[in-house]
Length: 262
Image (cartoon, rainbow, N blue to C red; front, side):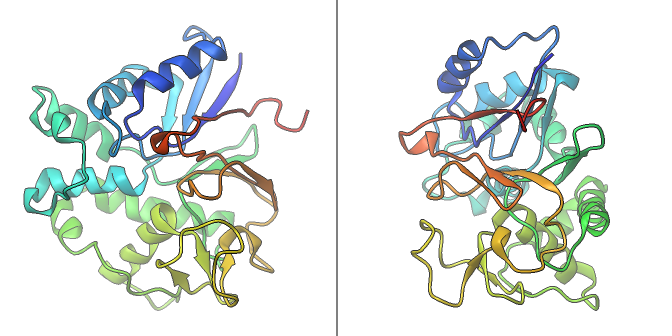
């Protein structure tokens, strides 16, 4: 049995099929972990979503910012953007089924056997593994609640951008979602930055990649993430970045997890 983590697919279904052929993926025994952003910007978001959904329990996926955006647009069509390419999902006969399936996906997955965590974007330095899991469950419960549309309606905002134990309600949820699905750079206190998304070294001097923050409380946890195409493949600080920009004409990456240290 092999377990592979797959970088941001973003509707690049043909490339996903070729990658799975290249690694000789066997549905009868192998498993796949997806770092989120299954949809959008690519041309085959519908095919991608259907394929991963139909894999059932052998596929684990966490939510990315483009997946959250699809959930928002499915409830608030006026929020669709000119560059969005998931209209085929919204028009599909199984649209409601696909959207509901996506809404049940987690923001964070941790495998107790492998001792590896999976997320889309980043974590603030103040959270250890236990709090990371707690915060993920809090946001997941809000997304899976019957009245989840009320939360989605107020979700889009860059504020608050700094963690505090005093945060509550929608402000707490915004911060949680923004970390798990949008985070790249922050300052040494963990204050989130949403303006810079380039290569390492392109950022202002006061900003640091989230995984290089000194005294980060998840520094002892092996983490797999995506979201950062300009970063490319990254291995360091006990973290592995695997968004290698497939939708921008580069590659789709598979990282084998069951022998990661070999």
